[in-house]
Length: 428
Ligand code: C2E
Ligand code: MG
Ligand code: MG
Image 1 (tube, rainbow, N blue to C red):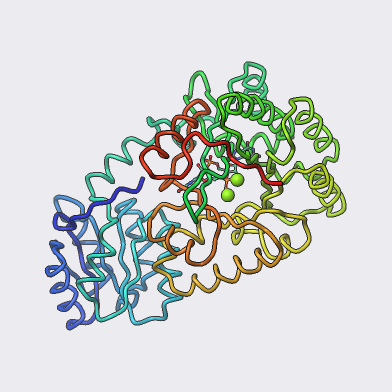
Image 2: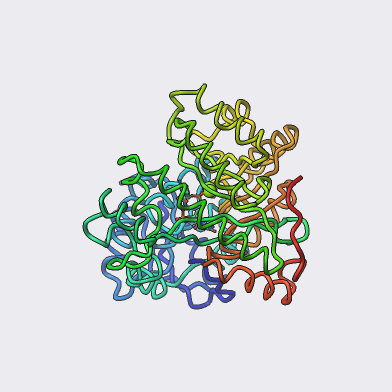
């Protein structure tokens, strides 16, 4: 969860730097930025010892990557084990790309990677970076809440549901869809919604897809799951339409579904029978691994396009979702992965990568969507780079079907998005 703390006065930091003068400057800049310095160290081991000895964990560690006893990568690893979720600011004279890689490592280790700042450290930059820092108490409360919140964490629920349980859940209609709005970056208008599967498990609560999709894929159950997802989505679509809200719906397709031409026929038939225009449905495809049967995958995707469905390349820029996929499949939409987007405004080298991806998509006539927008600064950057749509917690978290029209009306009335009560134009 991202919360904004406009005041950084209450934050407490530990500073780690091998150079005496840099350490001195960092401490002075912290004080000027209103950050309390809890302690400092000129070595990695010293910093770890200091943090362990503090009665209250620091909110933030400001660290150099070069230390006499361990490198920054090892210190990040050790910090993640000592204080999960701890906020990190990296300050170093290394290249922005290396510092950015270190930030990515921090995020991968579960730390809160706030920013990489050039040296000499300056209070203004420090203050700006610390605005999004969650205090240690909020961090601890969040960790405690995990597993008991709306979405159960998979690693805290003990035995994972197996194929038999998934089948029983399908029969008992325990699966449901949450929807996350996609809005225009130009005027904020609602442009569509992505359907995200949830399992309302009688014993385990509301489960995220990470808790059961891998098992469903391993047991060859994804096609049954996809058919169920489409059934629910078509029902919801017609309910919204009757209420005056016609909007394109995005449905996720497992890459495994690209091996079975029969599934495409089933999907086309279901949409036709429901009297929903195919242009109102966008199938999102993500590849976990290289497609083995390219001919079948192409046949399915071309067939879906010829029937008028939209096709999105999901998680672009991560894993296998690459320029190669964009070039050979008839996609109509490109979804830029959250890992490219999150904090991009603080990573100048990302700007040119994103600009090129967006420009390439536009030359191919493909709509671009930025996923995982959590910060206003990232939304502003993506707008400036010419990206068309945004999706992410900043706009709205995934919500139950019944909540979407209410969210739309409330947000439009509050002036947060454009077009209250309008019928959304579907892609021609
Ligand atoms: P995805 O298709 O890339 O969906 C976006 C995921 O990012 C969703 O997670 C969504 O809740 C999350 N998300 C959205 N905005 C933000 C944000 O601002 N910050 C962060 N940190 N996360 C954000 P979810 O619902 O857990 O879904 C995870 C993945 O599971 C999906 O990634 C998709 O690949 C898969 N999935 C979801 N529903 C289905 C389904 O019906 N069928 C299939 N085959 N896969 C599905
Ligand atoms: Mg998706
Ligand atoms: Mg995605």
